[in-house]
Image 1 (tube, protein in one colour):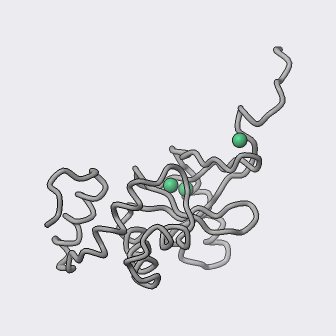
Image 2 (cartoon, rainbow, N blue to C red; image 1 turned 180 degrees about the horizontal axis):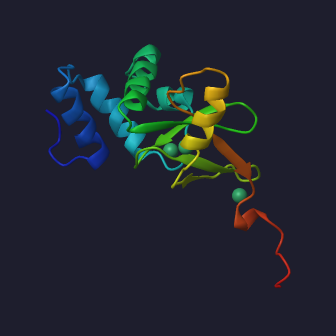
Length: 147
Ligand SMILES: [Zn+2]
Ligand SMILES: [Zn+2]
Ligand SMILES: [Zn+2]
């Protein structure tokens, strides 16, 4: 039986699965619990390795489902590697430190109207955008001289 007390992410995912008519299998629970345990971003392969009892394809499929449902974000590192991390909010971007690799959520995006205008110049009906911001976090920057 499934333990009653679950991480809120796991509970919400299971609620959404049930509401959407998806089967809540043991593998789905296991993937959701493993995702909820992650701190920062993670690789799908590493997650699959944490779950030897769940097939790799099942792990990948459920991560994809969690992305589609908005529980997990894709994070593209500066070197092109794709990672995932728990998403707590709606539309946002990530500030990714090139030194320590930490990713922080960047809220308050107002790029949509700018991009809509540019896309319209190409007679292109924009449906969305995805953007990562690379740089250095405070801890990884040399101390700046006080102004
Ligand atoms: Zn995110
Ligand atoms: Zn850093
Ligand atoms: Zn945006």
